[in-house]
Length: 418
Length: 153
Image 1 (cartoon, chains in turn purple, yellow):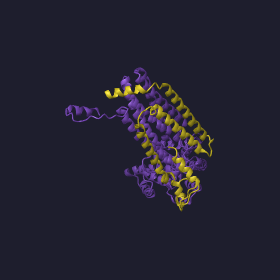
Image 2 (image 1 turned 120 degrees about the vertical axis):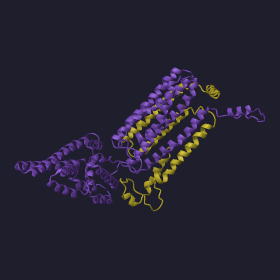
Image 3 (image 1 turned 30 degrees about the vertical axis):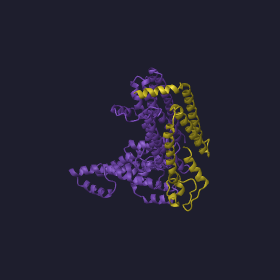
Image 4 (image 1 turned 135 degrees about the vertical axis):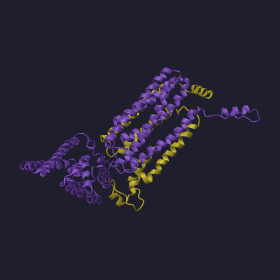
């Protein structure tokens, strides 16, 4: 406006009638900020609205309650308080800056900045606890939150097994042919066969690790079928007799607290078998003649495997025990991770958990991004003298910050209390 | 620059010290947060068994009150003069409302039109009775869901 007038004056034409046009009664920065906020209203209202539609459109009882997905409403309430308080200190900053009270303004702004940091810190803690429970934002496709041991779940398991076996010592499929080949090589010992034998030993150990889970996994499948309401899934489960799938299914069984009883039963029968077999092998070993080298090695090897299996089950005992007493469904993934079966980790099963996790991370993530931007905008004036000249900047940044607070006002009940 | 100064002078002309009002608004926001958190706690303890919609409705209404408090006092829209505040806020709000309403038929009511086969293959057990695909029924239950999904904004 003023530039335009100036230009006309500089020209000295004098023909143009200057018409006074009233501008908006606010400064330009504020106009732009409000324009931006009106697009932000659309942005967040669309996201929140979509969440509301999805959440209430879900059939009754199939949307995770806050506690199912480890949402802590106390943390949410604290964060709400922090944001509201920071909004309050922003207006105090603005008032102080308007009155030219620079030191006071600086103090309030520092409090605001610290509040923003505290909010982000709590948010980070919350996110990490979600990740620890296997709840991740999943770009594209189904996430790892399975609702039940159904067709999708088994399909995913199959994929994971395929991935897993790629990284394993030797492929799991077609193992029998290779077995016989290495056995023959063992009989003619030379340099080459030693490495093959080593490889074969490793492979047998890998197989044995998986073998641990094979026992009873068929019964487990039946157990699941008994609980899957529709026959289609049952047929699918029964049709999937690929042993690796079953093995991994029996691994993931610990993620389902409702199967813990079955696992305890499985453990009992397994440990009983193992101790019996170990005794047998011991007897066989003691009866062996010192000359029978080959038989001795194979017995030693079996003994090692049996011991490994026993150790496995004793670990699982504490796992099941912990599960029951600590947080059901939480710990086993961690254990799988420690035992380097990361490829087999599956998250626990929560109805509509996929939808929940994508909406949760999308909405709170965008909100957290806005908080970060706000903190950057508040970071600069921390180095300034916040007198009357800066009041406009403080006001505009404050407007943005209040909007971020406003979004959280809706996110808090929707995600933490519903 | 002169523009800025002029405007801040204008502010001083018709804006007074809002310190007390800000404190009152802050306390009001705290009370509202307390109400929401309390209802959330009651719902989690099962005190709203069967009337969750009521609890949710109260919580979202409280949120709307909080939003209004923040917009009108902290963002001082109440004291702004001119049409611009309506021009910038109302169309955006209406658009966002209708964006959401658009989703209701296919997304919000997605399980109301499942075929029997789809229901059989559902990953979870659908608790409420499924509406058969034939015909456009509008049971009371459907309305309840649609309302809860739409009336809040």
